[in-house]
Picture 1: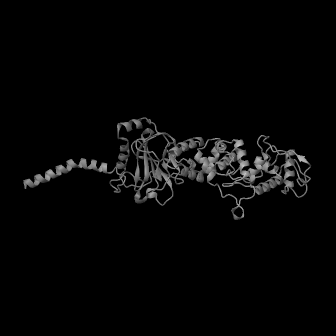
Picture 2: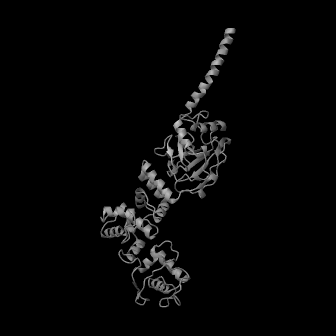
Picture 3: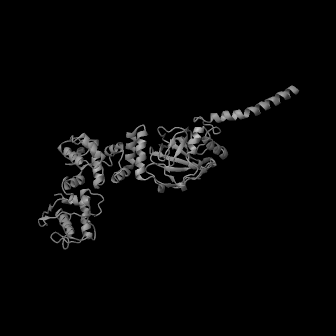
Length: 462
């Protein structure tokens, strides 16, 4: 009996002594990203793991090598009160709504901010940071954990893929690539979004929404994108994706004289903004040019764009020369020119509006259209329009405008003031209505009755 009791006591002591080592072994086992046991997994969105254990794990990510500790210490002890929008394009701080604390299955609550965005859009670090951990989990999908200023930890989940070169221990600057928006993990089959979490220095989750108040400037976004395009595994595909979904952003950048990466410029030329106008049998209207057009008219256009020298795309065209073939380089240069002169939409399609503007602005001459000879209803040679015109302005150029509209069949009035031969110097509702009809017929957008340089150029044509 004594021997039996001795064996029992010995077994209990061995179990007690072995328990710390078992705990260590379990901790080591949980470092695997493939474990699916609810008791051994890292914290995941919607996990039933006790809060105290979850917080301890997040704190533990920081307590590794001394080298990592030095990198984290360099981030500073003050957290950023305002956090930048981590999705680079397509989402602003006004586009999100709070969803922290929303109920989840099993009585759990949502511990982050879900930011809906286009799948594949780059995600950037809102602050300087150090990558703590990357991996793939059953529920969180592809994820990245970072150490951030003030002892905070930011977590990015459901990524389509983790950013190229993003590894544990990597020091990130503000705007550095984290990954790409996706719907991996338990978001599979649902809409793409970034699940974004902020944990304080105790590992407790905090609501990100009140702090997501900052946005990068357009200049900063393009600068960050330029760096990402040198890092990504397929810059052409990424550029085409971004232009397809955010063309307006890049057009705005061109208009602001912000230099775009060449792969974005190429994508602006190769990715259609809208179906190109075609006639019966897919033939372009006479005089129109687009991808794969060729001939003397293309040569003339290329020479014009080279001489106009609107920017980097024109310089590339100059390097290629006026070959007579309308390819991506020519289209990019045309998009650049259209943005520079205000032709909308700047699609790279050479149609009536662009043709009219170029005809009215020959290079080497004054940028105001030459004199126009009016047909029936006019009185010989009349000075061209040299300023913008709109409702309630007056002057002899308004009379000229009315004569041009009447002569082209867009009658201001059938009889009385404004009618052919009775044009006035006042721009009223009848003149505005005639301008709108003219703009709509010529494909000038917006057709709002405002006579700007595109409308003036179109009016100057026979």
